[in-house]
Length: 396
Ligand SMILES: *[C@@H]1O[C@H](CO)[C@@H](O)[C@H](O)[C@H]1NC(C)=O
Image (cartoon, rainbow, N blue to C red; front, side, top):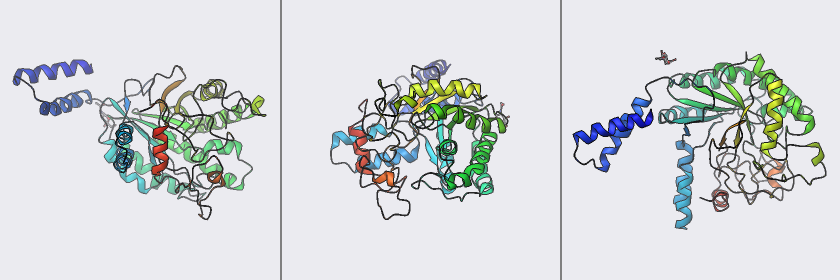
């Protein structure tokens, strides 16, 4: 249909003007887009199929100013290509809601807008670097001042396809860090908050993927079933919303997609984990999720997993030194269980500060395999970005 519209518009223009000049391409694109965008989006099947991920302005701006700051012009040219990669936009505070609409309004009809919902009360209960603005227990603020205002904006754009990653690390932390008092305090708010997001964002143009950690987290033999049960219980408590498509893995992570043998397959504890790469994790986790009563389609963050063999331990998560950008977003995943490879973590933004005197210093960010110096989580790290770019695999 898209081809047909373009052909019709092009021939109409050709009839009116003997020789269309490049300046006339603007109206053609705009009119074709308008025609294709005439109807409400009603997603079924893979939402990424036939749609590219919108390259949001926030990340593009960061990348373009990073490119402008480079003295190596060849590297700067490569950097500017990163600005065209579609990535997820993190809504990690209430204040950040202010950028949602200007981005949503700019999404093309053959594109999909991608956001990360990330502001649960007591966020990041097992680490220190990404603690959120809402205290554990403050579920009412989460609902009324975070989810509801985002929903009000989404409702204005029924013609735009939207993919959401719901609350990275939250439910996985309840599975594996239940011994921490901070995670105990956060547990009921996480479950209620994720269920609320599921219910509220259950619109025809939205597809949701709830975070399921990665192979080195819920992939352990003993964690697969409890992990699937935790996610599926929240899903069912929310009334099994149609818009929940499955789960996201490797968000802000480092695991390879299909490396054989897996990166940690020679570790002494490897016998307890068959999910030695993300492909294996998905193949193990999806069936568990489905038998627990939840849809099991996945998206996998390949934004920073281009180089492997860098971590001393599987759990090392902070600003891994030597990393490179990974595979670009694509639906050619080679797995019917994976809707798309995606870039969720904006490469170049820090995972956490390496300043040992900072309140939010987490010891993982001081480990020997972590890049130093690194600023606070979410802050831009130019040197780290340049490293990701130089080590990109495939290269830019
Ligand atoms: C499109 O969605 C909007 C918002 O839900 C609704 O008001 C409108 O009636 C829909 N249009 C069509 C043609 O279904």
